[in-house]
Amino acid sequence: MTALPTVPAVPGIDVARPEGARQAPPTVPQGYYAIEPEPWGAPFVPQEDQDNPVPSQPRGLLRATLDGFVISAGARDTIVLHPDDGSVLQPLPCWENSTGCCGPDGTEGPNRACPCGARIATLAADCSGPWELHLDPVRTYAFTPPDAHR
Image (cartoon, rainbow, N blue to C red; front, top):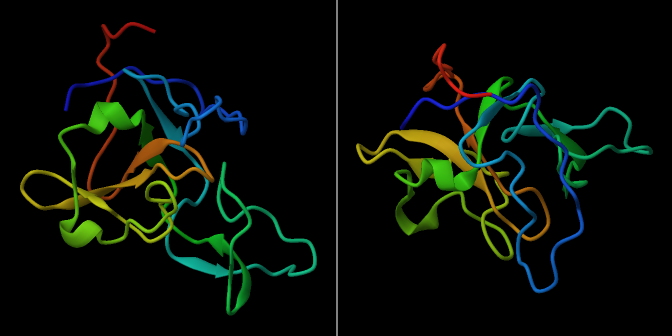
């Protein structure tokens, strides 16, 4: 993939979908990346305050399991891209970890791999949440060349 310039923070999303759209607008503009400082993605653990639950992850919805409302205990500092900037990445065989209504919701762990097969990213593209691609910070790194446009 090509080096991309960064945006200072992961932008919020507009929960309103354009009429007839299955996805939210992309969180990060195409050609840029942002770093998500908060835990994101699997695994999920029970929230301490079950009476006043919070969304399960940034830009996410409430999520409940048999253990009650859960919150992400996933990686911090994931690299967030516009999904089209990761077009070389492929779905896992049999769409593993890609559960969702209109697309993968991103809650089951990595669901995209490099052409070599290394699982490095999680696509969130369901109708109920953000449209973004998270690169695993253990397997990838963010770099902005000094001459990149801002």
